[in-house]
Image (cartoon, rainbow, N blue to C red):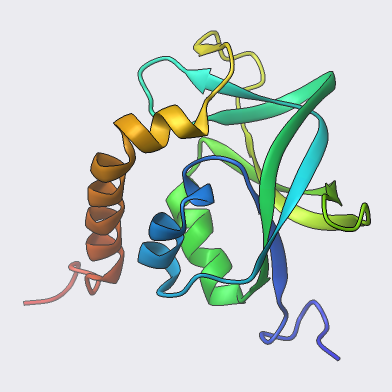
Length: 156
């Protein structure tokens, strides 16, 4: 049985934006974890002016459709934390699994700035996939190359 301090602990992560695309997940984690469709209630998925990815924030009586990636390891969660960067805060939320109606506690990346004036409308995955996925995938590969570079400071 894995405990919170055990590095073998596994996490479930609710994804709702670019990480709905298996290609992006595969680029980041070198695998596509098992997933289940899920709904996050009382949140809304916004578009962000000037960005191709979405933000979610609590909004009464709204819901966000996404999926839960299961069996995420601590090193994988660390990669996701760095990928989501400081604009998002990882929080534990309850989601409803679509195939069973069970409620599951999962990790989710919530937009940090609750008063951000750049949030608007509703983000559309199909539109993102059509217009931005290829360039986003290229950016993801560049992010990974930087992440995998050995620390340059102090080296000759």
